[in-house]
Amino acid sequence: MHPTAEPQMSNDTQMNKDTTPDPKSASASLLGRLHEAYSSLPESERRVADTILNTPSEMPVWTASELASHAQVSNATVSRLIQRLGYRSFEEARQHARTLRETGSPLFMQDATTATRGKQAHIDLLQTEVGIIEETLSQIDDSVLNAAARGLAEARKIRLLGYRNSRFLSDYLTAQLAQLRHNVAPMALDGQTLAEGIAELGPQDVAVVVGLRRRPEQFNDIVRLLSDRGVKTLLIADKDLREAPAFAAWTFMCAVETPLPLDSYVGALTLFRMLITETASEIGDASVLYLNEVEALREALNELETVPVKHVI
Image 1 (spheres, rainbow, N blue to C red):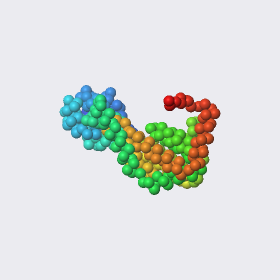
Image 2: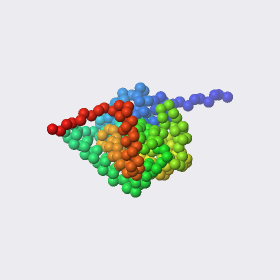
Image 3: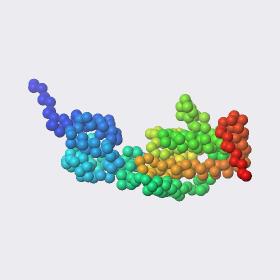
Image 4: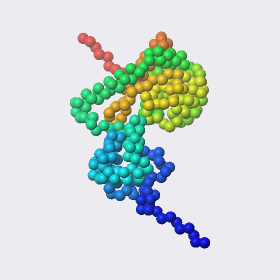
């Protein structure tokens, strides 16, 4: 019996075997796939890769012909690269880039047509930030705001959590609420696991979870777990969040997207100001007494700078 001959691979099959990203990385970003395949790309396809990597924010809006023109190659070269990266079509690759843009990847958010400099850039920035604040405020339900402030005022403990850019927002709100009442702190202290922070919370407590895009993978699971323990959760997020609001007692959506490459958080900070003001009102005189106590301790410890008194003549 003669051994069965090994099937011969065509040149195209060999090319795909050598340079197509591993199937395990099929969920990798477009840029990740380009970097992975880059060293094995023919010169013409490398020009296409360079064009995308140099201006990724244009990929969501380019057509295949426009990309080919910018890279000074044929449409067929673009098609070969796209297939090599594991996409079935150029449209699929473009939709992948659009998804990254929608989820807030800074690399895909810069709009070259809106780039301005000088005084006009300052005016554009101001208008954009005002628009973010107005859009955020337009989504606030006063009854929900009042209920959330009441919950913050009456809670046994308040614990706050935020990841990535949401971390500094969470820390800011922690510092402000801690001037109004006792028992306000981050959910996970340095050196402590999140599980240890959650374990001390129950139905008498409020968890404030700030989750503006781009959130960690386990975000929804954390909010669900808090709900399972009976913890009342105040959720601050953006319009792209799904599932987690179903497990929160109060949810506020903040506008964040701008034509610039990074999200804006002025809307969230404005919401925080409203929450703090309403919470202070709910606590009443007790918040003033507590703040007086804090101020007295600051003075005793000489913690803050002394502002010179201006004498009026």
